[in-house]
Image (cartoon, rainbow, N blue to C red; front, side):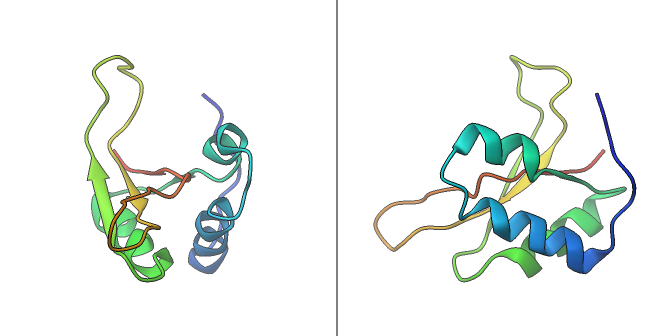
Length: 91
């Protein structure tokens, strides 16, 4: 695992929102992820970064034990739910 230098809240918000416009979903999943130091900050970032439709929380994925709990923004309309590509991880 690689975690880079710390970024401020505004930069983290911009990074998460930028993933919604990335056409290559696999690239967006890796280039725009954010690691927060706790659940509350991850939730706050997700709520701030979402534009209209809210957020969704996912627990650890069973098939990947190193996949931390995380939030996604929801980018969708009233008929289809589409999750933002960025993961907002927390311990």
